[in-house]
Picture 1 (spheres, rainbow, N blue to C red):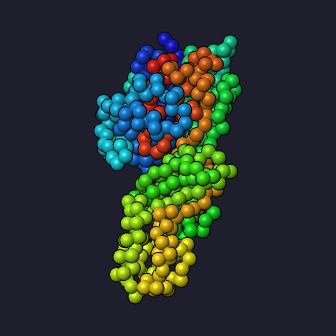
Picture 2 (picture 1 turned 90 degrees about the vertical axis):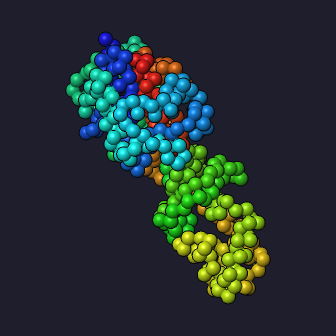
Picture 3 (picture 1 turned 180 degrees about the vertical axis):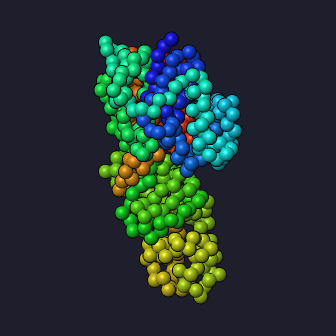
Length: 404
């Protein structure tokens, strides 16, 4: 019987352990935290967006980093099969906006319990102990060191996650193990993370959540990301689903990124101008600042007036065509400078990790060390928000588990 050690009882680790045990291996999972699935517990704001109900081609469009590496894993375990897997384990699911898949219970703990039961019911053992080292001899894995003893094995699956949310156990251990065994580590950087702006308007607007707005990120005149949806102003900058996805495409902050916000993406410049003219006509003897209540959230109005640059008390009947045009342009292209992302510990996922060219995409086995496998976030692949990253975890975890 093949002896397999899985390091990390997160999403990919428990999936790998369950399948390895199902195929007849003697499986031990080492988890350094007091319980399994700590990061899973906080995903999707505690609801766990466990997958995205889309086909493989659409999925690939949502993976900006090394998506071709995932073809074998996804063809082996595509998103709809993953949903069926959870249903077969007794976890009822539902599909929400953006094809996001959640447990019907809206409780991430149910996903964790399902995965732990899947691993243990197939015969895997979870040991709550930290692995300190992986021992290899003659180009092959031999054992892992945990505590004061060696655990001999035929294969090791590194499923340690990245470096985001360190309090859940993701402290970069997998990078350390892989590097020691000869692997190249693409520098870990935060991804799916809020963005930092020095612009004072962000602090003035902190707490303002916007729906159905447009967001475009540019650098040196080129668009690096564009979408439509939800965002949030914070005391340090901007956040929300669109902003998190935008961060995946922002690799070099020295380029000088700018966020362009379209508060009225459903209206063309001409139609928005007509709307503004109508509102001003209805409030012809009122000040401009008191005439925008139907068009904008109350908290946004003073910021718009300030950026617009007119006297807040100026009456609507005295506004010029050029002044009205300046307001329309401002509402369609409100800019915020972006200087950096928040610290990596606040990232939902880590971009970077074990270089994919050093991993066999058909098995997840290292090309450098026999019996060494990788799955999940420790690999240099990452996707947008919406359940795509957990699909990567489940698919690569299953492929690694089947192949050990």
